[in-house]
Image (cartoon, rainbow, N blue to C red; front, side, top):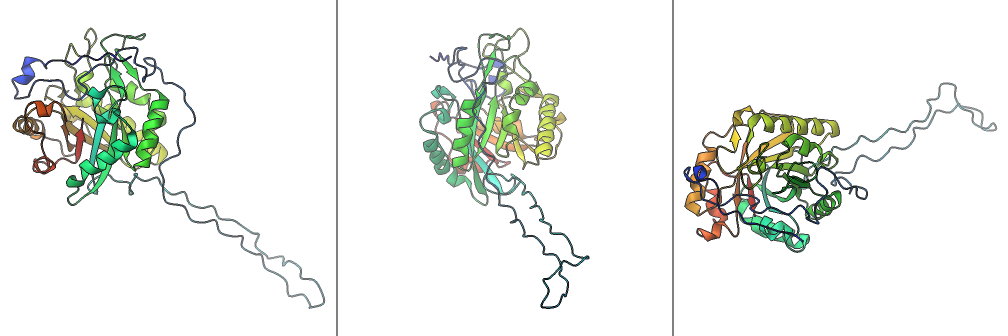
Length: 360
C-alpha cells in the first residue's frame, strides 16, 4: 500500500522570489513500505540485463586468404609452395553504440520531450499511470509540436531513488528502485526508441553514491541521470519538511563520474539533468565544469500560471553557464490550478529556447 501526502507550499522565501507555492517535481512522498522500491541502500538482484540499445551491424567477417601453389607437372598432384602465406581471418571492427534514434551527440540534433513518473503513485506523473507503451505513444503525440528544426528524442524520466519522511534502516530517508522495475522501464523505453533517465531524490544521502549505485544501468548507451536537489536535505532535516539543495561542486562530481563511465564503455553522450525551482536550490552553479560526453541540462521547475512560470524561467536562466543546456518542466495538474497549461508554442518562445521539455 502506498501512502501519499501532498505538501501544501514551499517556504515563504521562495514565494518572495516570484515563485508560485507548491513543491516542484515530486510533490508526494512514498511510504517506506512501498512495494515498487527495494530496501533502502540495497539494489534488488534481477534477471539478466536487457541487451544494449540497437546499433549498426559491424562489417562481415572476410573469408580466408588462399595460399600460393607450385607449378607441378599435370601428371603430378599440386604441392604447396614454400613461400605460401598462411590463411588468416580478419576480425570485424566493433561498432560504437549510438543513441536510440541514431548518432552519438544529443544536441543540436535532438529536442528531448518526456514524461516523469513512478509506478503506483499518480502524483509523481503520467509515466507511472497505466501501460508504458500507451505512455510512449502519448509522449510522441505531445512532442510533435516541439520538433521545429530538430528531431524528437523521447524521454522516460523514472523517479528511481525516492525520498521518504522516515529514515529507513540506514537513516538516509530514501529508497531505491529495484533492478526489475528499472529493467521494465528500460525495455519499454527501447521499444519506443527513447532515453531512460533515472531521477534521484536522495533524502539525506549524497548524490554521487546514489548515482554509483546504478552503474549497471548507466553503462547502457540509452540511460542517463536526473538529479532532484529539492529533496537533498542536510543531516537532522527531513525531506518535505526542509527544503533541499546542492552545489555546483557536487553536480560536477557526478558529471566527472559519468564521464568515466562513458569513456570506459565507449558510450554516446549522456544527459545529466538537474531540476531547479529556485536559485537557492543549486549554489555556485558555475563550479559545474564541462566533461567529455556529459550533457548537463537545467530543468526549471516552477509551478504556476504561464506568467509566473515565465518569471521563474527568466530568474533561473539569466546567467545560465555556457556548458549547461536549458530545460523546462510543466505540470498537468498543478499548473492548471493557477491558469491554463502553457502550449508548446508558448514554451518555444522562451529565451533561451528549452532543449528538454518534461511533463509531470
